Image (cartoon, rainbow, N blue to C red):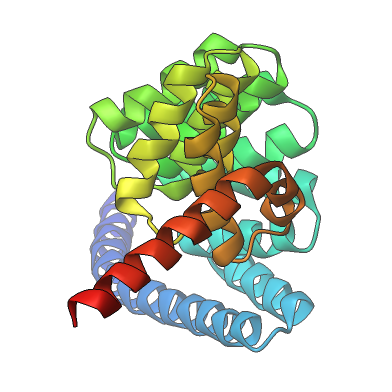
Length: 272
């Protein structure tokens, strides 16, 4: 009887080993099939999002997550769509899940930070964008957005510091950065520095009317009325309505400029 029991145990153990091997192979195949199905749902969500079907995209991303609860990209894409639809709380929840699964995904911190700030949690937004900058010190948008958040909580020096830090770290030139820096310095009545900041921006973005308009305001406050008028005229040429409203202050300068051009033309005609 004992021998019979032992033989049964041996058979069971051996069968279990064989079954485990087959189970591993089957498990790998099943895992691949699950990943493929989740991928298909995610891709279908992308197509719907591109087509403007936001709700349909969310439903497909949700299906992908139900199939694979650790699908980082599905959570991330769903967060973006939720945020675009105004569901900031839902977006924050998804971004947080992304960060739990992949703590190095800077885009998730960026998205969550902006969503938090939108809901009034400026400090939480600043903390998230600080993490973005730690992960990517050249992300100019992170500096700009963090600067704006600091401005909104009254940390004006911190705001200026962020813009200058982006420049120091050789981030890609950004028109918003220079426009915000010029405006922040102007608000603190540091008019000469403000004009210089706008001027630096103009070097990179000579077609941005905001920079000329802002520099004109700063120049006017430094006593450089001629420089201010030149900037407002240029800003007006580029389509700035606000600059048009300031041109009446420049009538004398405009008359002088027109007279000068007339004299130059007359001189040129005499030479010919």
